[in-house]
Image (cartoon, rainbow, N blue to C red):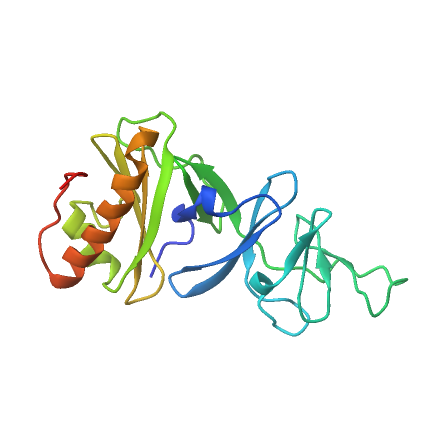
Length: 212
């Protein structure tokens, strides 16, 4: 079970453009990630407070996330601001989506339930990174971390201009996110992520060379 008081990398920031919505999973928790038109990132429980519809099926309009089912609109703080069936009604402040704390660093989107002093460091690499790929590995997080040479609680590993982040989507699936210091290496890093997934699922050693 993930410690929800800690930060967890869950996606590539580049995969969520301004005005778009995307689903994610963290240790079995369904999450909706979305950016308003100004590019501000939000993360909520992927469930509309009205009828439980997945908000990741919804759409962004004028700084709000609208549910696809009945069109209820929620502002960046998660509060319902408009109900189309009752356009003159001012929704009570108790109607809210359950929110996560979200931030971005090293090319990744990070989530936490509680306040945290800072995002995890990348063990010496503080520069900008270019996102390369996210890929699902059908192996538990502990085994993936061990294959990559990461500690059980380490969220990121930086090595030779390549940065990896892992999180448990659920008990049997781990997401691997890869970014690079040199943008020219992004395509090779994306292929490396695929080879790494295949190696881990076969129980083989991970080869760190980007170009094989």
